[in-house]
Amino acid sequence: MAFSSSHRVKILYFAQTKQITGVKEEWMDLPENPTLKVLKNLLFEKYPKLQKLGDALAFAVNQTLPEDTYQFQGDEEIAVLPPISGG
Image (cartoon, rainbow, N blue to C red; front, side):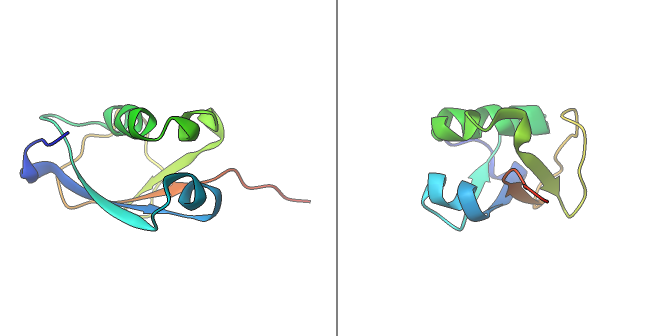
């Protein structure tokens, strides 16, 4: 699905998310007025297995953890972080 290149973002995948997507990183064009929630839905549509991780996934935008209402400006870097277990 191609949208306006004025809202192009770089997406980085780590650990389990990298295994699910089969890529380390990719660029994605977003629709007009894109929010983090919109990006999540696009990724879950493209990679249904990501959605199974649900709320355990973290999405960092330019090294911060914004709310789902975050509005993309273009050229941001998004890191899709898998669940982290500790002990």
